[in-house]
Image (cartoon, rainbow, N blue to C red; front, side, top):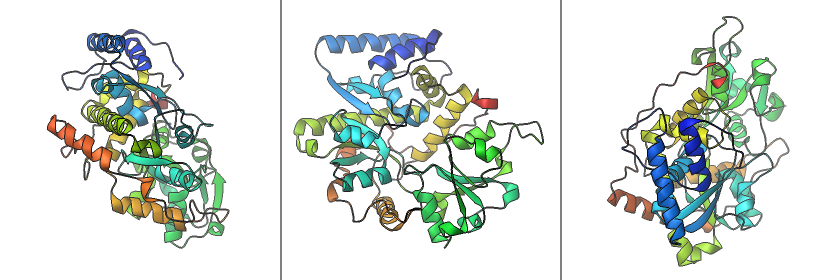
Length: 394
């Protein structure tokens, strides 16, 4: 994991997150991480380790440290995993890392990845199971400047349309297919993982995650006004509204190991700690952003807080309880994976996934226990905060 030297409170949390310890607090939002409680948790963790009371667990992320994964970093920093008897090490991802492959090979205990990407791996033989669907909503959008007049998939005809590829393209292709827009009707552009080509005018409609690339545009000065772009400058195609959204960040476990009672208990404990972490992020977005920044993330302060806030919107309020896999959403994801073709004519999968591809057994047990402990697993009263982006996300 990359680590960046930081001063003050952030440095204290950096040490905590790197070693699997942290602290709880009074539940209120804070702009600075509480060093004292962090140190208290570090002591608590050391004592538990010395006694041999902890089970070491590795979690593989699908990308580098950022607020997309704030709940897991918060669970470490606040000792939520320690409270469940787990000593969790977070392993960052990267361009050349496929989380589900790392999990299937036995190198980690759990992994975070998108459902459509994993469905293909399961068909190819990966024995892994979605045990908690953390993101209920998709964050993928297609954005354009207002003067392009692109407000729906049908409007993409005749335009330069950006796509990252690498398994991120399926909601776009499904949306086009639903509007009878064929690939030959657009100019498909290989989009880099930034918004430079879009800002330069080389891409008319670009892929953008609500929590990242969309913010990158709003952090950029409009050369015509000398001020930052605003949402009023953009049109957004949201695949949740179109009906071609697919399930994204989920917690994946090893299927065969789920027959082991010890791994079952560990999985429930891991999900409990993770949910408590996400509940903390919901109620303390500013402090959660600080925790992620201290973990080594290179994103600026305002961008990190924006991401925290937008990720919260993907989870809260939860329809059935955070992590519960909704059958209709699962079926929609599978249907798109079966019937949507990419530019090569391929689909994600050729047959329905096995019944072992997901289960609600462990997340439901975790939710039941958390409800008994007084943890809000629904977030019915959740309200996002207002975030002011600075130039460059500073």
